[in-house]
Length: 73
Image 1 (spheres, rainbow, N blue to C red):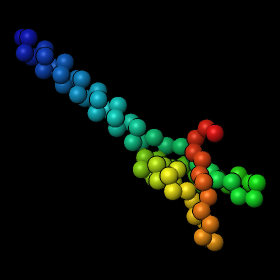
Image 2 (image 1 turned 90 degrees about the vertical axis):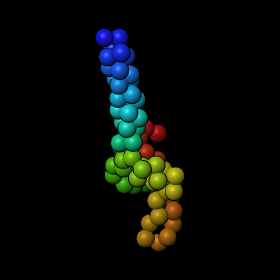
Image 3 (image 1 turned 120 degrees about the vertical axis):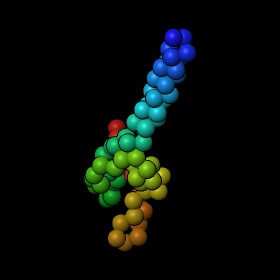
């Protein structure tokens, strides 16, 4: 009985960690950048796409790269 209970508690603990860590990967936020004193909406980005756009910025059709702000400012 004690072995079964330990396994259940251990499994529950591991499952909780997996669920909590996967939630951060699916985080989504609305992103925008500023051009000519105007706030340009880019839409919603999630997971790795969110990390990439925040890190690398947004490059428009002229080749200019802008800092991107996502979520609350």
